[in-house]
Length: 131
Length: 280
Image (cartoon, rainbow over all chains, first blue to last red; front, side, top):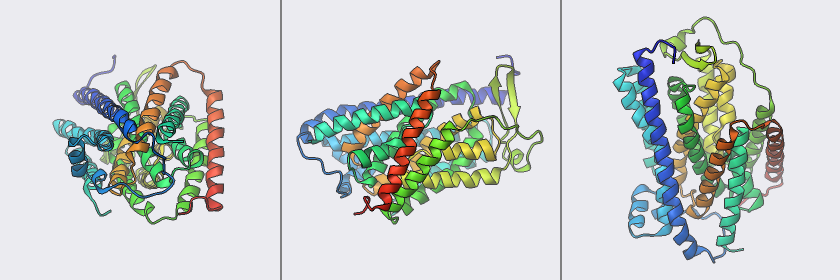
């Protein structure tokens, strides 16, 4: 790099590298969990007739974080797939949370607030059950 | 056909969708919903839920590769994410009250627009030479690496970009797609970012936008594990393979072919929306 390296640029670069690792790890873990649960899921449901053309909505335990965790503990394959998807949804959320720390380290308070707003919106959408 | 066979077919279809989507830059998400609804007869709500999940997977996978290159502008991305996440939550909430046929028709129109946007030749519009007041206040101006060294740029039209981003978020929440085409429109043409910067920043934002709607869809029971599983694994596998092949691949012809397919799917969604195929 031949550009004058300002401290802010370097710090941005380090933050970007950590974000890259964070995103890759989240996606990999999610894919492994979903794949691992796919095998028992298909053994359990594979021979049944699909009815995806009729919309019923998922049972309550597959809709909320607490229900998904509880059913995953009981080794229900559908719940473990849902757990993998939850890890996937949490990955960008974790990225935003990390950005809060990165901006705080740079003492960029305006962007700490901007990022906290985004984080709050994400957490709200994940936890609000009456939307 | 039983669930095992259907899962295999959906996996294959998603693999191809992800592969072509990443090679052509259109994203795999845009064809997942037409594929599931038109080819496999899946209810459009389940299809949108599964598509959202695959959008998060590909966006995060691709962003991990992009962030290192130093093109994306994190401040622009984060500031505009306020607009996209509010839009995405609003869109996901509104989607529950929309007629399914309207969703299908809107989807078709967005497919047509995305196809047009991807074949249109993109040239860098000359950015403003003077800093913009709002952009400076928000410290949105940035730099990016070029062959001639680090180049700086100014950002302009922040309110217009913010408004377009809200629209992109709403579409993402209603349709379960990344809305990459609208995001690039906002940053490229309204805010005058260099297109390498707008493309990578958009990719960076898509996962966050989709996560905001995915939360609402999950809580509402629209995300079916049996369906989301082959879609997510297929699209992710296909797009990672496509990204690996992208270096040095001649994609111009492929992009025209895939855009044509996307446009035809768009027309079919609109047609089926009008004749009432999406009614329950």
